[in-house]
Amino acid sequence: MLKLVIFLVFSVIFCSCASESSVKDDQPSSSRTSAAARAARERYRLTSQGDEIKVDDQVYEMRHYDVNKDKNPDIVNIFKKVPNEKGGHDLVISVKMMDLNHDSKIDVWRYFNEETGAVVKEDLDLDFDNKIDRTDYFIGGSVRRSEFDFQFDEKPDVIKNYDELGQLIAIESDQNGDGIIDYWEYYRNGVIEKIEKDTNKDGKPDVSKMPGEEGFKSMAPVDEKLEADPAANVQEKPEDEIKVEIETSEAPDPAAAQPAKEETEKEEAKPAEESK
Image 1 (cartoon, rainbow, N blue to C red):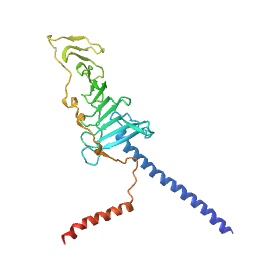
Image 2 (image 1 turned 180 degrees about the vertical axis):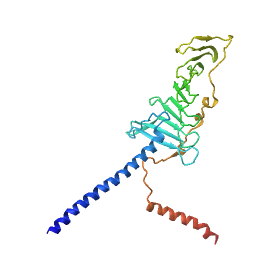
Image 3 (image 1 turned 30 degrees about the vertical axis):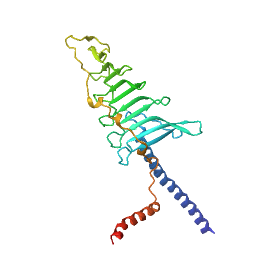
Image 4 (image 1 turned 30 degrees about the horizontal axis):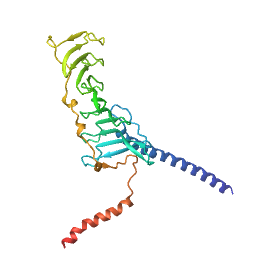
């Protein structure tokens, strides 16, 4: 009887330890799976400025397009689900993200007004260093303000303002890199007509030059690479849409792959049989 009691006690202790060990072993695996899923989602949901694009699967739908047919998404569209009269929902574009140089990293984030469908903002990484170089703000479908980072410090140092017709009306610039605008150019009908500069760092212009005066010369930097808009010609087509699994890191089932392997072997054997 004593031996039976001792055996039962040791059995309970052993089972308890085994259960704790199993729980501890399962936790890292689950954690790794969740981390992998989060990392995959971040590729599309985070901008280069670190602002998260909120994607609620109940409200939004994400679609991927492979424009250059390399089996990797070049365009990722986020659509808002809008209920319709038929009891279903229509898709309204909210954000368009583009990989311009096909390196599997997003270079352009284009944001839309979900009510009107008009573009309201666009972030561009035109030198592909994973940092925003230019941000355009739209009103009524046209760019009214462009911010450029020519010094590549993730801060706008040149700002261009446009009228409703798209004509340049003013340029603001931070020429000494202290984060404060210290230079201004003003335009009329696309022609520069006045230059102002802040030389004592009080944030106000203390030097003004008019056409014909000595020293009247545009000082705002120009970079054709950052001025260009290569994203304008990148358009997806329905046949480019691909399904991208980014929510799971589970390995494929070997049994499910076996029939496909057998079919491949049969197809490879046909030419040999026909040649006989």
